[in-house]
Amino acid sequence: MEPEIEPSSPSRISLWPLALLGTLLFALLPSKRNQPSKSVHPQDSTHSKNTYAQKQTVTTANIEPTPENSKHPYRGKDHTPLWKKLLEGSAVTIAFGLLVVNICQMRSTEKAAQAAQDALRNSVEQFRADERAWVEIEPIKPVLRLKGDSRFPTAFTCSIYPKNVGKTVATDIVVKAETLGRSEQFNASEMASAQDRYLLDKYTQKDQHGNVGPATVPQSPVPRVIAPNSTANAPFILICPAIKTYPTGGSEYEFVVGRIDYCDAFNVHHWKKFCFYVTNDQGDVWNCSEGNLEDVNSELEPTEKCQR
Image (cartoon, rainbow, N blue to C red; front, side, top):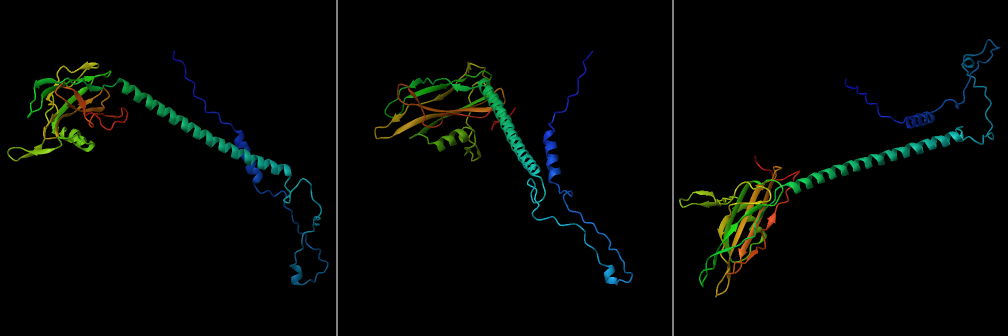
């Protein structure tokens, strides 16, 4: 037999502050007990032939005035006992004190609730950050293809292997990269334009027929899904020539600029941007001064979500 559920008792509210408030209001109300009363007595008319004006005369109250020097030692000017004034003042002070205490308790409760909510959000954010997918790239190992001479730089090929170092699967993986020749390093604005516009097909160009269309950068054959603690089984391979220094002065850099976009298990979009170049004929790889970044997209309130 299912046990009966007792109805929840209403919250107990202390009534003594209400009683104190009522006493205070009662004490502050104007009292008529101390107001002097007036009694009007009609004059004895012994003369039957008084004038009309004499008949209209109103006699004043037959009350003896209180002597000026008759003062009670425990009463004020309004005849209120001193103990009553002290009680009224104490009641006002206590009521004000209770109001201040209640306001402080209410603010403390609000702060504690906000702190608990923030702690919970931080805990969930930390948990998801620890459990999500994290895509990096394996160290680049250039492979020599053609030795350079006075006219051409030494040619290498670079294989980009994405790997998931997180604890859950990475999906919707797209790798885009391009070798861009320049005579100097990229600044921050130029790198952002290359990685966030050019590699995302936001540039336009004319084809051989004069038609304008997006400057499409082909994406790699890297698998679109990588399991946790795994490396892609197919790399993205590009030509990556070494720096060419000319006898007349000046150098030619061949920067490999790229980005990896992917989704984690919590449907949040992430990206990894990279830029490197081969600095000599021995195949040593250095990072660019700009372009090696990783997103800081929140797991709870992401600015970019995956389109599923």
